[in-house]
Image (cartoon, rainbow, N blue to C red; front, side, top):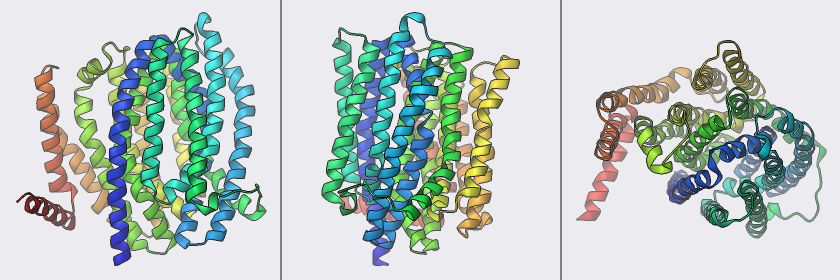
Length: 512
């Protein structure tokens, strides 16, 4: 019981620390996004988004091996086997270096051909687009090789170090944006080059920190254990299917929008995605604090603890995200005007639809963590990946033959994501011995009630109010009250309500 109490305290401490980190990152990101858009202009901003995103398409390799790294390191830590941990880390580094080379080869062949011949880029910006692409390849390689060190920090639950390192990265990007505004050279090329330099600097810092703190990261020479290499590669190979689907529809939709419309549409999507990435941090930070404990609980055979963490992560990740998304969805035009001044057409509708997908992501991530903890991912990855891979073909057919507006590609994404979530639940819950009925009653049913019932009053009021500052604050207050009361009434279990009341009483007592 004492160990479980300590683990809970660690989760709370790490969550608070990650949210402090997030506040810094949000403020910096909002400012830098505005300045980058104003400095580059809509066209160059769109080019940077779509061209830089091409190499991210190869990120399905990155995501797959990053997930494998985190899972194997965390399980070994849960078992307390340092020798095995050293072998695992050594093999993971070897695999990442190998695949960084593969990214380079694919990027300079197939990827370069696609950028040169298929993308809709103005003739006078082709030279800049070429160098943005080259810098993006090297940036992706550096990010790829540094991921095992990032995974080690998170697996050890050293969230303070993770917070400091990521805040440092954000400050460097802020400096880069300032330098961009005074640069006499091509600003699109300069921006991509500075992002590359920051990535390489981050890479060096991660290595230095991990070598000082974690003995398993001390590498005198790279060695490969064939059995372990095959096990990690087999695991990563199956996660590639799901990761390929994610990066396929992410960059695939971006490419479709470029082919059927123009770079300004990519700029609108890029702005919406930046907001989405900021908002996702609200649930991601909470999940990041819980995920290592969830995986370790499974490794130690404590399924009861694992179920408790899974349900808590599912519910409160969605609730935290919805607190932010609801007023932002309702007041999107006003928020974008304050933030950017002028913004491309379709930005409002793209943002609203993308925020809905964020809520679905928050719902699916804990399920994904649970299945990765088991290691039995073959069936899960085939089913999930196959479902998600249908997003781009369906969107293409609609754009090609029915000439639908660009918003429809996001609606396709939402519908397929909902279907895929049903598939995930049916596969994962039996693997961890969590009854579907229990999951429905204690997790999904409360979430659905809160999302529907807390939205009614804010949506009704917003439909009769103009977009201005006083009404903005009124809507935000109504959203917070509606969400807060709904979460307490329908979203919390009896034990969670008692805990909330206890915390409130403690706060009152401190104030006396």
